[in-house]
Amino acid sequence: MVEIEAVYEGWLRCRLTHGPSGEIICTDAPKDHEGEGTHFAPTDLVAAALGSCVLTTMGIVARRHDIDLAGTTARVAKTMVSEPSRRIGRLDVTVTFVRPIDPAKRELLERAALACPVHHSLHREIEAPVRFVYP
Image 1 (cartoon, helix red, strand yellow):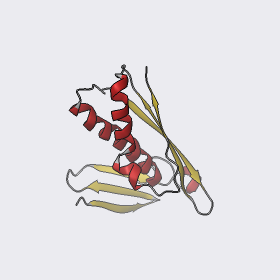
Image 2 (cartoon, one colour):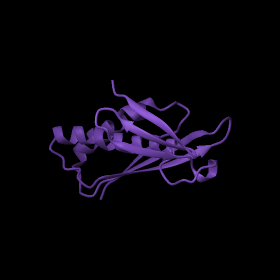
Image 3 (cartoon, one colour):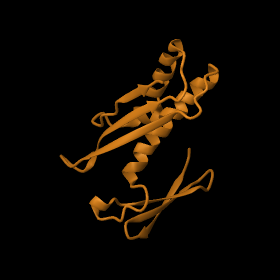
Image 4 (cartoon, one colour):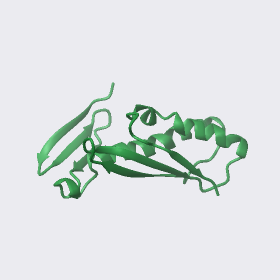
């Protein structure tokens, strides 16, 4: 179990502390939802978690198969919807590799990306396609 403490600091901002490490991040409501947009919005953290999880899960498989993924990026484009309620509607993920990957090992990495725990934790109504770009 991991605990994260969230403290409301006023002005639509929260300070989040990661229990195991003590690492702190802050959130702010986005400008289009009465905030100042000076930090990640809570829904931005969902998008960030997805991108990070995709890369980390692929990294685990890459390490097992001696594949160098250093420099690989995951860009996540978050789209909000307002009906039937304000929520994340879509998270488009683009994974871009900076060095060639053996075609026989691409399927291993792609399967790993799609098996990441965050991807599996998203509500089924959130579209979350993952695209892979090879050099």
